[in-house]
Amino acid sequence: MTLTELMTVLGIIGIVTAVTVPRVVSWTDRVAVRRSAGEVAVFFDRARLEAMVRGARVRVEFRADSLRAVLEDGSGAVVLARGGPSRHGVAFTVSRSVIHIHPNGLGAGGANTKLVVWRGAAAESLTTSRLGRLRWR
Image (cartoon, rainbow, N blue to C red; front, side, top):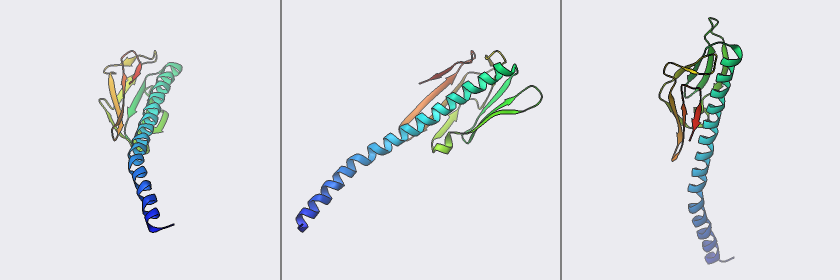
């Protein structure tokens, strides 16, 4: 292989890498954000189910590093605890970090909450309602 052929091959590899790397980074951002949003959605649904099954009000706490659901029946027992979205390297904002769910599954007080998970250009938005529903866009 001559020096010209080697330089041509290296040039082609450089061009392919320059085109591919940004797409791979964008793809990994979307995967991390989607995974984190899915985990938050599943956590919320499980916390709501715990309130209905146990017949007790549950306090749901959303933090970037942790998600917790705590019984408000006087015991203060933690019924669910998970790592937050930050463990996947994504940013997380929430309009209300603590919401309450009644034993019938309905939100208490200011249960309307917007949660946003993002990294790079990828973002997912989740919204809870007073009816206990979670909308994911």
